[in-house]
Image (cartoon, rainbow, N blue to C red; front, side):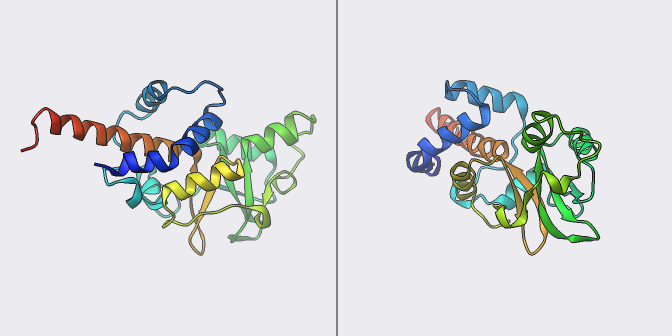
Length: 205
């Protein structure tokens, strides 16, 4: 039961920074965060196994994205308006962008932030602008693999100030967000606290 405590001791400041970036607030409260996580996802998303043993693969499984065809994507030739409609329909904040004509090749990623900064603010028409004109291109893309530990994923996303990362295992197999990572870490902490309470109250012999 020391896994979470050890991890938070080593990565607590980074987790706090990550959460603040995710919540876009300057005030941090563990109680508020745990309450928010529980209200958004009351069910346990990953069985208790210790942060050192949790990889991106477990997050994808919990999200149901480990199945074939679960990647939300668009192509470079799609119009931004179409991409945003797809994000809205799937309730996601980003799409993997695949090369037009070769939908096995990763071209980049497009996010709600790209839409806000490159379409809404300058007043560009989303019905006339293609995704390739506003996306983050592959050579600037940060990716992880299914075997990446979630603490390492959190570190990458915090250091690079990004909220979405494609999961790439020779091909794109999914996408994780900073919310997914924070939720998994806090959920593991919550489960460990529950086990500790059971131990203290004598439920374990």
